[in-house]
Length: 96
Image (cartoon, rainbow, N blue to C red; front, side, top):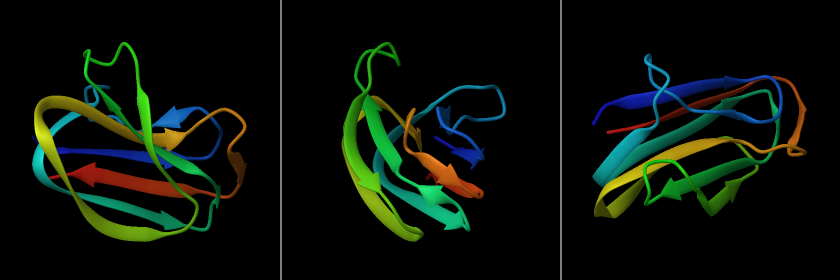
């Protein structure tokens, strides 16, 4: 479990832990987006260890929420895809 974070100041930046890894979530988790940044943050899941990613949600404003992951060993990340960043700084936190 644990937590991943990101400070987004450009496109194609994603949450990672201190070792540069994505997070595996099971059960209830927290997600936060804050800052003055403008852009779409995409939330993604991977069932194959981060080889392929599936978009599950797009967040276009600051948010503090919870979610539930029913699957075991599913990787998660949040970030800004190429073409979805406009300006400012977006802070992200994802974890349990």
